[in-house]
Image (cartoon, rainbow, N blue to C red; front, side, top):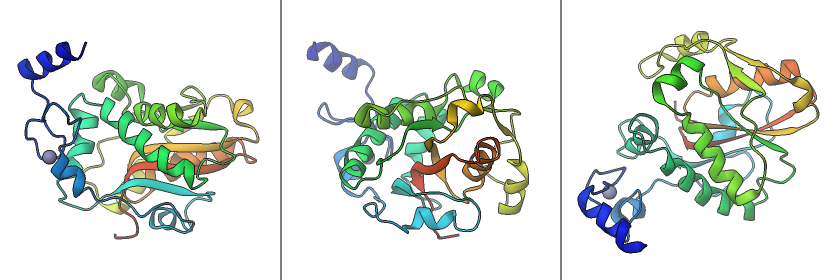
Length: 231
Ligand SMILES: [Zn+2]
């Protein structure tokens, strides 16, 4: 029923999630021009820039991200559209694209379960969805690794971190996560998934809560966008 989607596209034209221009019929989420310039992170290698963010703050097996996050970049609009503009399905497609490459590099080897970083109940209700669930779905579609959205919860709706200083962010995310069923994560290699990693504070807080509840669990990390070690 391609003609139906073409018709919908004419009536409600989709815009590029980066530059905002109307997408051509063959384009999806991001226009060809913006796709060509997309700031891909380097292909997955051990000790990459995203892994380095967690040195000394959280013990992880490996980490990877789809694109590089820099202040003021128009590509930050993609994350904005996913989180605040009701376009979370973009996250699923981007994550699936990333996973297709990462599978070839052995990134998912030994990973038992994917856990999207949870939102608090309040924030989830306000937004209507957790964007990290959509990222997890894209990874799971490609790898077949199951998703667990119930074993870890977030207690309180902390304030938006957008304009907070690094130190304040650390304080803000302290101990907001807890593990509801440690036995279900026992001995598992968990892939924690977030949309953006900048300081690593949120993922570190979530990871520490998991390791405190299940010390024999192992952690790896995937984010759609990562600042790498640039701050
Ligand atoms: Zn564009």
